[in-house]
Length: 401
Image: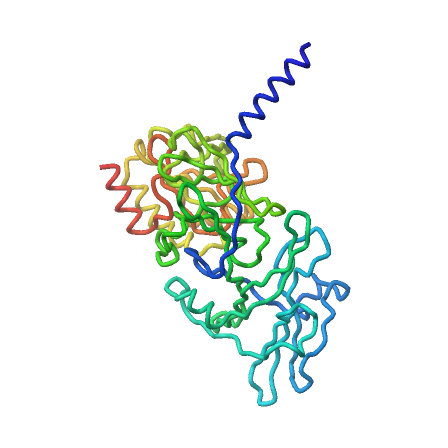
């Protein structure tokens, strides 16, 4: 009887949970939508001898016989658990007159002889104000790839953009395609792995009607990653990711008000964590700082802009009433010796925690690059991101006043 009762309760809970889960069919759109162009580096097989053995290299033919310095490689389009044509081969080298030429195996038949020769477009400087869709239309080439939907292999055509950036001396690529779903009369764009593949393992969402790629200051504030929250009107949805086999976006309806939900997004409560203050035996938790404005400063010893900010933070910390404001440094991706050296060199007096495999603070907040700062109000709600320098000082003095 006890087992039957427990089973009935479990079924009720599961049923309630399922009522809050919605799946939205994805349609693919060419271009970049509201997102900034994402780029991946092209490496020929000759540079990857330690990682890609000859047995896993694509067996291709048809390289031009009059080229010199010929290189061959490929670009992964989708992760796959079956044998699909999910890699696009490419070759490049110097033509008869020494000019740089390239061929992409657009029809995925492992033969370059039936594909056109071209020169990648050259781009210098920032990508933020680039006319990305115009660039895609003028310079992208359509390539054939395969992926699995509903258990079956399907063939698709995808625009592939290849560019050369002289400041990096590097060939870069981007798949100019994104997903789109409709919810509450709004169009939501879905970016897969920063346009470096179409696997939809690592996704970001954004409202399609606002081109956030033109605003560097607020770009990341408008991006919604896996397990983050999307608000449409008064409704809040959690991004649970993409079910690739069904080709659908999965969202969970959240009944709590925004101020009671924990996330790394502006307007939400900062994710709780605890740890030992570095170089002491004292322990600290984020909740223990409630009642104060708190600046979470994520940094690494390899991050030059992070280190450059320390003298400014030190001056600010000495001027501000620390009963109302606190800085909490979170050091990651660095050895303890390197962290100690930087702390001692700059005589940092505010508390520091090392993000490690136990507290996993960086993982909780999705920190993949530096510098990164979050400003919290006394209730622990995130009110600003990535403030630095004079902008940070002005904001702290304004809210304390």
